[in-house]
Length: 218
Length: 325
Ligand SMILES: Nc1ncnc2c1ncn2[C@@H]1O[C@H](COP(=O)(O)OP(=O)(O)OP(=O)(O)O)[C@@H](O)[C@H]1O
Ligand SMILES: [Mg+2]
Image 1 (cartoon, rainbow over the protein chains, first blue to last red):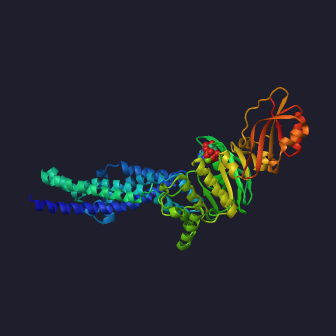
Image 2 (image 1 turned 90 degrees about the vertical axis):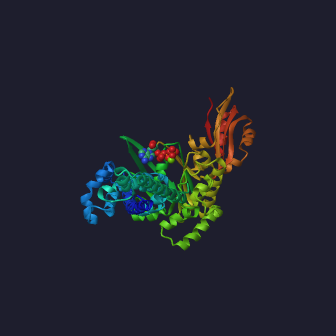
Image 3 (image 1 turned 30 degrees about the vertical axis):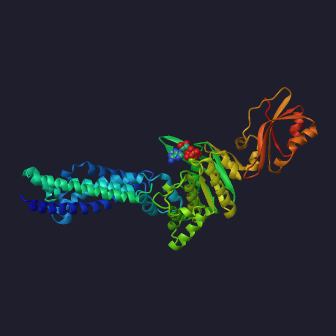
């Protein structure tokens, strides 16, 4: 295989990975924030205390987190068909990736929001804030650095999960490394893929760190 | 200005019941600084948090500025809370907002338009002497500066009442003094009514007109400081004027003599000596200017004619307690 073949493959794989990870990261951020906020609000002593609902949400999150990703990938196929109309391809892979990552990020969000000091929340209540204002102006706002740091971890985990997307024909860099490097012994392709992945992950981490530093005023 | 009656709050923690506030009545008059003094766990914070209903009391009513907070719907309560400022031991500032942003918070919550907000914020920062730190973040400030921001924020929505939960407990003595001076100044200039809780006798000494001592959820004494001083067995009086152990000689009678108000500045002792021709020894005590009144408390040993001496001092308005051993 020539270097130009390899770079074509890499470019294509990179685009697939970026699409899968990018879109599922956005969906995960939204879903994880919603679920995380709900976990905090419905907890005992929370602003919308509802312990039974909280227990149910906790269970759903734990089930989501304990399922090996490869099993989730296959298990959600019927759901994927209902949502995107097909069960194979890069876009189809986004559904299980998002479903797998939301519970992961939701727990990070929950932890980050709990770190906001109780007296700060109580001060906001004493100033006449509504629940909506407390969530938006206090909890989410004060936790921003931790939320971004957690999202960085989640996105990098998504890069890892996306390597398994080949199972549903998702493609991407991970799939490339498995197909060429592992199954066809094209060592150069595998090494090149791994290098690209390392650089990609490194860039995500650096970007995350920069944003966290700008948001953090502790 | 603040009227609390029959207030009761019980916590249920691990099958154990803690009656944090047990049937407390409290009256803070307009323009008064009222201090609640008590040891750790006495229920002071719980009492304060019941006043703006951060905690729902199990029984009793809370009136602030004529409005019964305990009877309000959630929406009305939110509006009413804006009329009650609160400052906290650990400042409770938003770390993600600048000084100006923190002070603007209550205005934002109340829906005050941006242009009015910034004018009001500038005014408040001027009031607490932090105009030059408007753009700083709380993490860049000293404890005293943080508490000034806390005070500016608490005053933003022009409350009639300020609640203070150990506002100076995390500060060193000098900073404590400057924060207490600021509170006194606000009390005088704005007529702000302040309900503060503390475990430091010095705070009561410096700023309180009236006070209560709290113990295991109850008030053991309560009233104007000048009256409490003249009350037999007052813990507040004993705390404000610590006295040394009684050491009397043969034939001496020992008395604790407490005076408050103008009597504190009269030459009572020399009159006593002249009138009765007795010898007296001073065992300890002092005369001080409190926020509420001039007051003094002395431990005396009188050689002979103890009864007459006590009678003389009582007639001059002093509280006299015999402590001979
Ligand atoms: N949320 C709570 N749940 C259970 N018990 C509580 C709670 N808050 C306070 N208590 C209990 O109520 C009692 C009074 O507590 P409170 O915080 O009012 O005391 P305090 O006088 O403010 O003490 P400190 O000076 O240490 O702040 C304590 O025994 C405390 O353990
Ligand atoms: Mg307390």
